[in-house]
Image 1: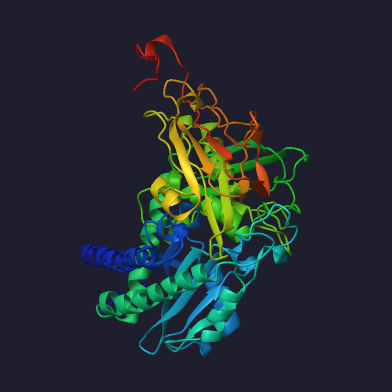
Image 2: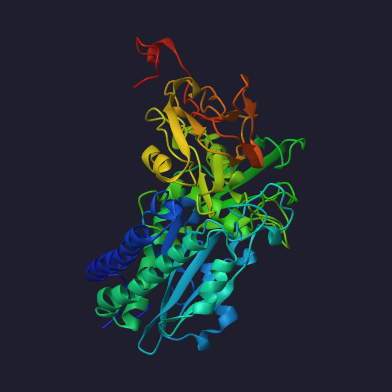
Length: 550
């Protein structure tokens, strides 16, 4: 029998909890494998632009797959809660699957579509499985649905809000047809949606065999309570390692997303109060009419949680209660808490820098706890064109750069941003086989790293040639204020995206463009910044080759 709420945790309880945690996490890890095995889009099966989680009945994150993008940590609940509120919990049936990308609940670009399903046990809903994946194109002004010309969310695609694509186990064909009708790439949409649906169905099966088959609803509730207490206690104790007081950091973005606009100042303040950690965004700029906004949930809260987990629980599987000691303070209407119809297509322009700023703020008083700045920009490229059958093709990709040096060693790299974790790039073989592109070179950019007692990680340089007429869209920032050094280390070298068209000898810089025409034979050179150096470089800590300490 389960213990009462007032009963102390026993060794038997702790053992049972570990078995429960591993059982639930095994479900989402299998779903992740299933999703990458069956999805059609390279963004899902190769790049891994997704998150997979199980929520409790009251929409708290119970467990999340290890491959989920770090910025998506514990942020699935608001979307599922909004969708269930629209449908009505009483109207949900066993076997239903619904989708949602409603901007006020999502707070990110509309491409991030969540597919979710209720899990029934003992006659009621005990949990929800939620699978967010990036749909390559959902309408809007341009292929990929992201455009620097967008001035409101309605120009960035279609919003779905709790729309059931499967009812009582049966696919609703008119809903699937609507998804396809609102995309330039209906074949991609069909393949990716069916992959999400398949994973939701598998979740119900695995939950039944691995969880419901072992624990009753009452026993699960008790185990969830114990998990919540354990997770919250872990991060509260970790916060105690930081001195109480205020911390702050600031940084400049290149502009507000439109050529000719002033640099955009970002600032964050932190307060450590015993076992509490407060992130104060009150000094952020107001939301803008360019598509670099986020909503409070998908932006401010997700950024704070991403940095918080890196600082205090990097090894612990994610759940809602890890973040009990975290408070986010932000007014409505800022760059990270946009309201109304604010565009969000390039919502991830500021997110890597904001995560890094929280770490930088900690480093202002306790540099031994954090690394120097990382490359800090997605360096997005979106290639687009039409194949021999007249179908639109799109290849959106981001770049890899260096992470900052730290008190224990050199910075790592190349990797995607702190928001992406170990997301893989597209192999040259895949790019050249599926698209009219040729990768001419791809190498470490050794001059990019900051120096110090421990140098930063290296950035990369890649040169790609267009083999047919096509268009290019880009999103690169942080060229004015490069990745910073920490504790006396030097800054890294900022990145760039440049184009050379046939017949020209000069390279043209393209940091934020949409649909730039590239004739066949054009070259595109991507340089992604290195990481900042950590610690002052002295004669005592330099090896004979002139590198930072090993």
